[in-house]
Amino acid sequence: MRGTVFAEMSAFVAVAEQRSFAKAATRLGVARSTLSQNLRALEERLSVRLLNRTTRSVSLTEAGERLLHRVRPALAELDAASLELDGFRKGPSGLLRVVVQPPVASLLMGPLIGPFLKEYPDIILDISVVRMPTDIVSAGFDAGIRFGEQVDRDMIAIRVMNEARFVVVAAPKYLARHSAPRAPKDLQNHNCIRSLLPNGTVFGWEFQKGNRRIHAKVNGSLIVDDIDLSIQAVLGGAGLAYLLYDYIAADVARGRLVAVLEDWTPSLSGFFLYYSNRKQMTLALRALIDFLKADTKKRGISPMAPPSTRISRNYLLVGKGSRKGRPARLTSSA
Image (cartoon, rainbow, N blue to C red; front, top):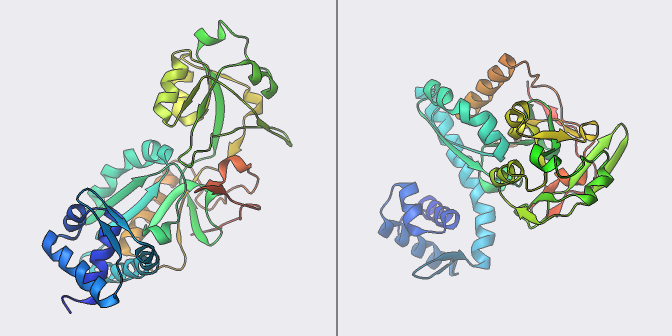
């Protein structure tokens, strides 16, 4: 048998995740020929094809999909154990994989990356930005940051951003031609810029006034899957947009956009860092947790505040479907 079982499995997971032998070889720091040898040895030992290879693409067979699902968490645990031992010699170091939603990337992580890496130069920070929630354990991430209402009930969560709210905005030039809506039902008479989620679902427009909650049906001539394009469209007077307030706060303050239906604005409990309570914590993850907790304290945010349990289906979309039932009240980490 050529190579070790660990080397073969590591090669398989790298190729499966990267969908490329060249990228996987770069990630592992080995020659592409070595990677191919390890993959062939693994398939021969298991007597099953794991990958479909062409000159242009690499894809998983059904057997490969099943093996990846079982092996990836185990390799992540081995890597974490190795990194934790390294930490006893030189402090927090190694690869730290974090998945965040776009608002977190631009509003929180962007400004903090420099100071964090300066304080922990031996950590390699790998950040993936996704719009839809993902299972951090099966995907091999150490932690994630998303809306608190979207965090699974078996995760440990720490609040890192204040309450979030979605608002309907329009450019003054649009409101000069159309009367501002006074209630969600008035949106039927407006051109609404709608956002498309990665699972093909159009992001709904949710409203709340007191105990009254409304899922408004809106229509319009523009559907986009990019936040920046939505903002440019509404600034250009194309119609009304339903956006996270943090994205357009500066435009509202400067008068470039006007918020409407503000008495119907729903609130979310904000963004939370979360991680598995079943996974051995690395020193690199501990360093990130402590760093973010110190930063939230400076900003006057309580990391112990749990997310709200009152949230509409609009914010619970995961993968190709939606979560059923009430979201859990999480156990926050001290």
